[in-house]
Image (spheres, rainbow, N blue to C red):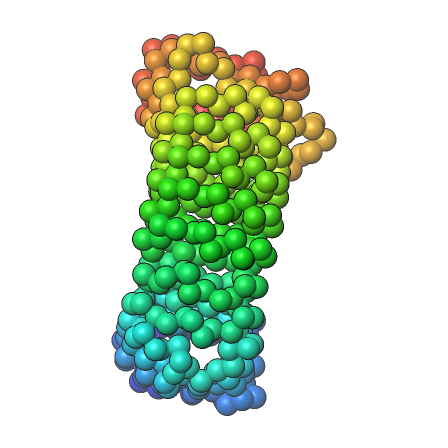
Length: 338
């Protein structure tokens, strides 16, 4: 159920809400949300309700209060909350300490794009944490059971202490000031890693991360991609905006489903983009290659290794290039998009 009307107070008593989800959005006059404990609403989202001052419900397990100009949480009474989203507010340093909830039950916390919030007391049981854009010192983190950490746009320079977070499966460190990632070699459970928009010069430390399926290295200072050859599970790679001149890893990598080269590599006449061997019986497998703003002025050869490319190539994008000739291929059904 979605509510977009102008309200000053919302009281729901034993109503039936489809999927147990209630969304209140763009309401400038909403002050209070009051639920009785028997109400079957477990998911509540409040978006851009700038006058919101209080919420009370023991039934809530998932609460999102986004872009509501909240500075304090002393009138938020949700003792059984498990997932809490407080993104894009104006939370004060001690705001989380004011919250009436059991932090031992809290598993997911999003306080991204707030002021500097104190998280040093948060319980060890937190599994997913988003502190992007908060200027929070991640060295204060004590939640060693984290499986997902988002720490983008935080001015982070050092990540040496992250070697203790061995349960992480997803780590986002986009748009920081990181120069080296040697610590990441200890995070062997990682499946998704985003370190784009940093100042990284070497990725040799990523070799042990055998479970990686998604990797974003865009806009760093890399000159080589060879260490990625060892990441056999890697299916999606974004590596645009570096100084790499050799993508030979494509010829031997067994599992690429998506490979993106944008505006960093001037393809020459002799270059051939080789696709990996993909089993014909795997009908779910698709390959996407983007060739974007690479100033291609000659014939481009796109080949596969041993099997029919028409079974493995799903989309070929070519945008903003200056072809003097054309794209030639050994297959018939490629779709080109201008």
